[in-house]
Image (tube, rainbow, N blue to C red; front, side):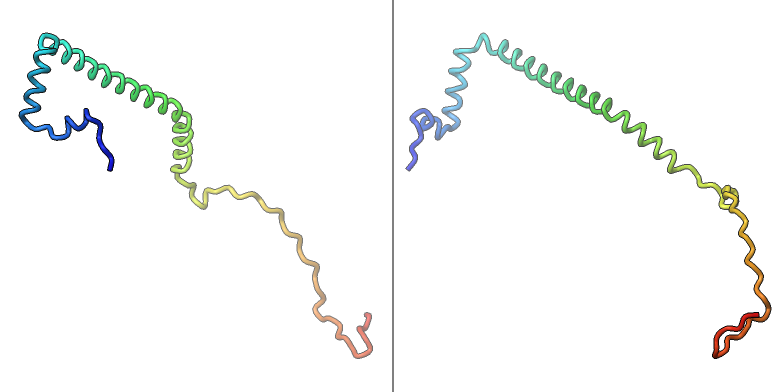
Amino acid sequence: MLRTPFVLALLENLGTPELVILFVVTLLLFGNRLPEMARSFGKGIAEFKRSMRESTEQVTRELEQAAAPMKTSFEEVQREVEKPLPEPDAVSRPELPQAQSAPELPEKLPRPTASGPQMP
């Protein structure tokens, strides 16, 4: 069985009377310095919040500066994509070279015979 140290055993069952006694002892020991301690504690919390806000703003600024080139290039691509397409008739088509005419065929082709084709 795990036994707790003696100090923790004293704090195991703190009730209302014990807390009142601790509060009175604390007031007697630190009574004249308590407002000063509370004031410095409040200043410390305010300083911590201010530094957290500043560091958050700094990180946000640096991220925005790093993302600025990507944002502008994305906006350029978006503008290009959103441009209306030209009308199909207005599309310039390259001129194709004229096809050469096919050689004329004779009207009647010689018929092959069993001995082979006949020469005219």
